[in-house]
Length: 395
Image (cartoon, rainbow, N blue to C red):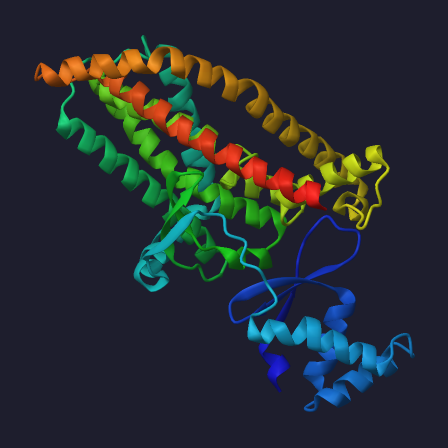
C-alpha cells in the first residue's frame, strides 16, 4: 500500500496539542493527531476505501466518507507526489559542495566528541583562553600595515577551513544521535557567502538534542579558536589577533537569533516553534489587525502554545520586530549618511596607493570591503521589506 511509505514520528514542540512529523521521499511535514490517525487507518488496510471507511467508523460518524475522501485527496496524496509544499528557500543561491557519502567517514570519526566529558573539557578550555586573550592582548584593533597578497590568501583559506569544520560539526552531531545528515553545500544568504549542512532529520530528535546539533558548528570551530589563541600568546602576531577577533565576531553573528543562522534555530528549539520567523510575523500582523479592527482570518500560533513558552515567544517576537525597526530607521540611515560622507575619500586614498605601486593598508581595504558588503545587505533588506509590505497591504 502506497501510504506505508510515509513514516510517522512525534515532533516535540511547545504546542498544547500533540504534533507529529511525517516523512515521505526525504521531505518532512508537520501533522496533527487526527491526520496521523487517518494515516494509520490508511496504512492498516490494503484498500484505500476500506481505510477511509474504518476511520469514519472510528470517529463515530463525526466525519462523512466523502469529506475524509476529499481530505485524503487534498492533504495526504500530495505528500506522496511532493506537490503540496512550497520550497521555503533560505538562500538566494545554493549548490551542493560535498555529498553526504563523501563526508560520512569523517562525521562518524568525530562523533565521539559529543560525549559530555569532551564537550565540558573543550568548552571550558576555550572559554578560559578567550577571556585571557581579551584581558591580556593590547591594542586589539591595531594592525601592522605590512600585509601582502599571501596574507590575504592565508586568511581566506583559514576562514574557509574553519567554516567547513563548522559544518562538519553539525554532520558529526547528527551521527552521534544516530541520524543521517545530508550534503554540505554553498549558498548565498543575504548576499553573504556561507556553507550549510542538510540536517533536516534532527526534527525527529527532542528539543535539547536539536539544540546540541545546532550548537555543534561553533563547538567544532572552538578548536580553531583555541589553536589561534595559543599561537598568539607564543608569537603576538597581528594576523592571529585579527583572526581571533574575526572568529569571536563570527560566533556572535552565528548566535544572533534574528537572522537564519544557528542562533535562529537554537531559539526555535528553545521555544519549541518550527517556522519561528513566520510565527513572529504572524503575531505582528494579528496585533495590527486587532488595532485596525480588521477581520482576523487565523489565530496566531501564540494562542496554541503552552503557558511556559508563550511568554518567551511573545518577548522574542517583540524583540525581533524592534530589532528590525531599529535596523531600518536608525542603522541604515546612519550608515548611508556616513557612507556618502566618507566612502569617496577612502576610494581616492586606495587609488593613490595603487597608482603609486604601493600596497594599501589592511585597515583601508578592510573598511572598504565591510562597507560594500553592508551596502549590499541594506539594498537586499529594503527590497525584501518593500515586497513584504506590499503583500500585507494587498491582504
